Structure formats: C-alpha cells, structure tokens
Amino acid sequence: MDLQPKSREGILSTTTFPGLIYSVLNQKETGILTLTGETIEKSVFIQAGRPVFATSNDRDDRLGQIFFKSGVVSLEGLLTGLDRSLKEKKRLGRTLVEMGLVQPHDLVDAVLTQVRNIVCSLFLWTRGRYRYVPGTLPSDEVITLKLSAGDIILEGIRRIESWDRIWEAVGNLEVEYRTADGIKDLGQDLKLSLEEWTLLSHCERPIALRELCRVSDMKDFDICRLLWALLTLGIVNRVSPRP
Image 1 (cartoon, rainbow, N blue to C red):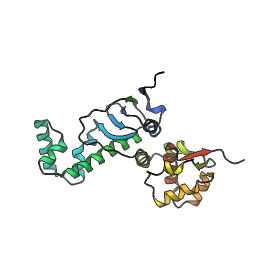
Image 2: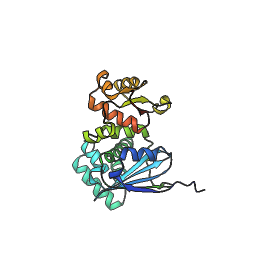
Image 3: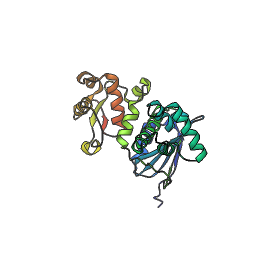
Image 4: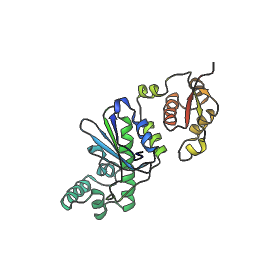
C-alpha cells in the first residue's frame, strides 16, 4: 500500500481557500501549497502542518514595502538598498541590516508581517489554480517562522469583507451550532477576544444562528465571520435544528 503523501491540484473556484489550506495543515505534512492567478503566483511553505514561510511575485508583497510603509526606512534608503542588493546579489533584508537601516530583530518582525500578509491575502482569492506538493522544503531560508495554523485561518477569514462569501458559508438563521468534542485541545492555540470566547461558550449546547445574534454583544457580521472560521477549524459543528 502506498502511504506516501500525494500531490493535489485543482481550481479554487470550486474550493474555498480557507477549507483548502486547513485540509493541508490538518494533515501535519510538509510541502508547498502554490496558488496561481492570471499574473500572480504565491506559495505557502508548510512544515509539519504549520506555515513557516511564503513567497509571492506580487510587487505589493515585497519586504521593502513593509519597511517603507511603516516608516522604518526612508524612500532614499529603500531605493539605495534595492540598488545595492541587486548589485551584490543579496536579499534586500540582509542588505538593509548591513547598511544599518534596520536592526536584525526588525528584519525578523518584518518577515513575519510579510509572511502573514501573503498567506492572509490568499483568503481573498476566489479564483485561480492551486497545487500542493508534499516533500522536503528548500533549506536556504535563513528565517523560518512557525505560525499557528488556527490563528492564520482566524486572521485570514477576519480579513474577508465579502458578505456573499460569509453568508454562503454559514447562511441560515435556523441552523444550529455546537462546540465539537475536545474543544479544549482544538482551541488552546487560538487568540480570541473575551466577546468571542463568550460567543463560543453559548455553543456548548445547540444554538441557532438567530439566537446567537440575539445573545451576543458582537456585531452580527462579525458573528457570522467568526462562525465560518470556527467551522473551518472544526471547533464548532452544524447540528440539525430541533423539530
């Protein structure tokens, strides 16, 4: 029997990205998940079920823009660093550190932000192709970041503003939700607000979406978006409405 992990590929329009990435992370495998649009390609590097790095050919995802937009590096410094990194064939981050424009800890923070932004931007994709290839990751990355799978999915779905997508994921006022078995293990890594934990506590018994919206202090929009994330993570389940 062949128990080796297999490559997967398909069309994103028939698969939501939140469900796709969770299905990959949940296998605790190591590999690369790549999404391709018309001109943009982004890859998420996964190690033992955790996103550790990400790459993108989108100019808006470049590390230099993070330093520039945050005011850490001036426009002149950024352009000088870019020119020097190209001439010396070094990564921009390393070049900026060598120039004394950023500190090593600033570089780590910026890469973390870059990786989060690349991964979370994929939650906004509704079209494109995906391919997951399991296997050993390249070893030339100086910085690898062990991000929480649960927090990445929560943050990614929180960035989705499309009500049509959210309503499609949860959409029925009479559908009841209930926390899954083993909730303590499932939710131990999640960073939820007090309001969100309170909402989750209401799901200890089957409760309809209509009732959740009535008893929670959260906005109905945020309730529905959070439920989508909790459903994706398997922290809550849909149950049949009581007759």
